[in-house]
Length: 113
Length: 109
Image (cartoon, rainbow over all chains, first blue to last red; front, side, top):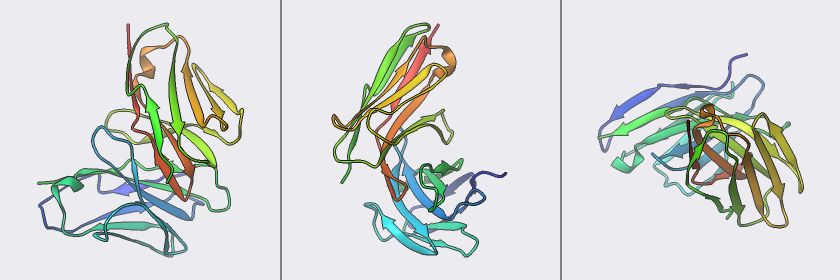
């Protein structure tokens, strides 16, 4: 049973560019959440998708947007990249029906230069 | 908005010693989670605590929850080098999970 997968593993972008990160949830999961983890800090909740809609959102600007596809996979898009967007981006999946736990993917390390 | 505070943020222990990491949270939380993160890696789930008085143990780690005090603890017994990692607590639920800043644990021989 494949766990949560994310691509790419690493990414280097320039300020002002746009980036798309991808996540495939664990089999049987229908909910995907995205987190940003800056170096030395705890993960910060960006938003959550369920049934192809954004259901909850943390304190992140509109430059951060997402999408969920019918197969439950998800994308995180960040526009007009800033140096401060450099971080590890974590995707977590869970089942709406069986709530207790989120499973985290390996993350995408984004570096903005 | 739920806020989660951990202490200490840095912890250096000798092998064989015991210690406790504390996690305070600001408002009512459905549940309390503990995660482990190794350098450059993702988060590994350790415990989910669902009710007041809940206690869970796995190997040398034991977690507990006191919802009245809004406090969870992660107790380390007879530490070994393999436990060196960053430990996070998080509150809320799957719709909006809030993490503490993490406790960076180093276990020295």
